[in-house]
Length: 518
Ligand code: XMP
Picture 1 (cartoon, rainbow, N blue to C red):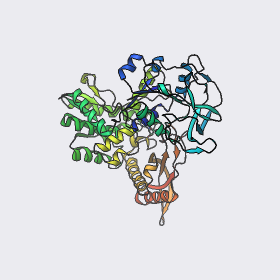
Picture 2 (cartoon, protein in one colour):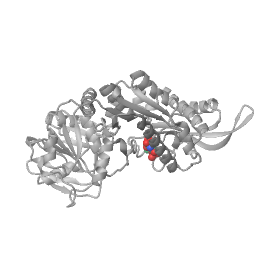
Picture 3 (tube, rainbow, N blue to C red):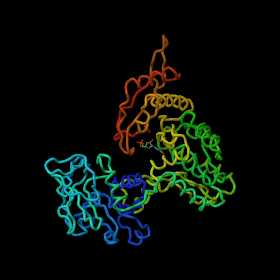
Picture 4 (cartoon, rainbow, N blue to C red):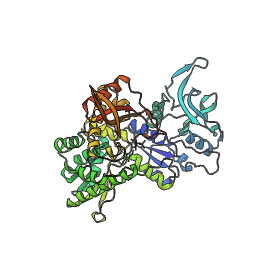
């Protein structure tokens, strides 16, 4: 396994994912980890990741010196390379000018890291060239004694360095991003050939491993799970069912704000098909009653969240002999809350799964996805036999259609929206556009607009369509869907749903617009 030390770069998680894609387990820890903690984790090698700070600032973070004294291979990436150079006796030069984007590096010396890797050949020197992605201001100005310069670009004469005998490597560019074409192979060289780490991190292995851990933790006691139909809780349900069978009880709260047929699909997949014990609570009326008269988006979110907790608690209290509460917490949530605690977070998201359960229940948490990234959770889901469409579905917000019906939520609006949304999604699938978008949905606008059908004048509601492409949901671009597709969707919505006279397409990017309309 590989240890990745975090200096605050947004790319750190990506490095961990890439290493795991190779089949090798990796964990991210803060740069100020102690020697005892490193020894306890017992990695085959260490990666020093990037960071936003400048090595030439006195109080900028450093790797613990022991990293270079444990006899382990070390790969420094970007800031990681710079701090490595500085800590081992080289020099770093500051710059206010950032180099950002594509660069072509010349391989000056073939090392184990670049072995047999090149994108092109430099005809003058007969050496390899690599297309890489750069993102840095500072750069290494002098390599430490014993190191050699292994790659260069005109603007960055020390683009990579190595002390082969010690298995210390540094690269200024980012092998973890796909723009660096041979990046994954470079990481493979480091992780497999140089560190000699074993490839055991596969979905089947993770499942087996988690099953035995869950069995050990739970014994013959009982576990409760709030099942939403989303990817994470679905995978937890399938995994726990496999591990402990009937000792798992799921509570699925139908709040009346789900997508078309969603409740049925959840019951079909889990209860009927897999034989999971699922209690479905039909709480549509309760949610709609509580939401009546409220038009403010944040107030609506609070009502939906609190009502969910009330319903879930009431249901949980009826089940006897439960000792554990399962949650679909995943690795990014864990990293983010750890970073938030130490104040080193650059992105802070408050994370809520199931809210406050009655104190008296004293439930212990079971979180079998705590070490996994979303893409790994999805692979696990497929391996566990969940339907592909469920596992690779677009994200759906907790408050559901509640934030896609602008203003006050009414059953009439929710019913119209469900139909419109289903048509949109069906047509996206048919046109093979669903998986080219990251999130797509319909929005109900409580405004009336005039239309004509035959000779009759109609004065009815408006539906907006939203489809975006995004990697991280922090920024997003509206999807450039084909006009023909939009035309089909629009025609079907207006013709098939009574109560809608107009369809619009949302062409706003995030920022400044958010993905959801509320
Ligand atoms: P925005 O609208 O902020 O959305 O651009 C970014 C992503 O977050 C989802 N989202 C939510 N998810 N509860 C959730 O569980 C919420 O209240 C909520 N609001 C937005 C949104 O669907 C998108 O994927």
